[in-house]
Image (cartoon, rainbow, N blue to C red; front, side, top):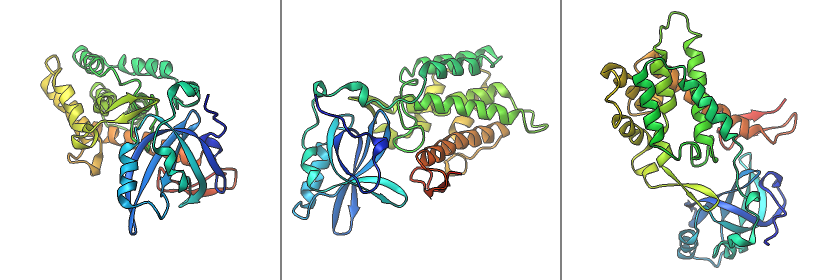
Amino acid sequence: MFEKATFVEEINGGVQVDAPFVVETAELREKRGGKYIQLAISDKTGRGTCKVWGTPDHSVEQIEAFCRAIRPGEIYRIQGYAKVFNGACEVNVNDGITCLVDPVPQDRVEPSLFVYAPVDIESVRLGLARMAAKIEEPGISTLISMVMNDAPGFLDAPAAKFHHHAYIGGLAEHTLETAEIALSLSGTVSRAEMDTDVLLAGALLHDIGKATCFCRRGFSFVPLPEYTLVGHTAIGAAALMKHSAGVDPARFGHILHIVMSHHGPHGDVQPRTPEAWAVHFADNASAFLREVSDDAADLAPGEGRQGALSGKAVYRF
């Protein structure tokens, strides 16, 4: 067996790292006078960042070749040193670039040490069912069931490549949080008179397109080309339109509007109704608070830094 003596949660600035990790993503980045590889690495304790620089003897072409050869979802030996940069700890690899030629054979590792899945999937599944049961209109309830049944990866997929809820089960967890927050908002604002059936349908389906934007590979999920070439919002809208027949056209149009506008001011479609704004705010709250929480998770009382996920300064009292 390949020894696993160092875990992501134990990596801090100034330590040498030589251990196997799952490589979740590998991206070629520009640097002055050349290129480097940025990796997202993980194990059962969490996710981290690794920058592969190589040595002065490595040409740009060689760095590019190393990047092309990496198979996301596989386990690789990461050999380098850790330092804190812009408030975040990252592993830097120079000579250890040669360890990225081939992954570690799966029969030489203990799988349970490498799967990062902090979500209680069964609890989230029951929570989603509880929220869906609050919908009174049979046609809308059926719409949700049919769309989700067409997305078998929904309960397992992550919600993002790196930032919020970027782990197995993250999409379902984020969806449940969004629905709960949106429903709370609808009951808090006086005289808003929101259509809670439409609100909940929009919240439960706002990211449904992501369920088919990832596929399981090795020990992780990796994004498919559709994630960036098409986008999860368009894919989600197409999934809804396949099952629109049993819903009042006006209410279906409202649900579709919520899905298309859930990115708020940053999307191509802007929210135009209280329900659409409520889902947008709920989506943002779930995502941003997850990022801030993860950025501050390993801080000691009295410590602060610039968060790598949220991009904001975080502090622990």
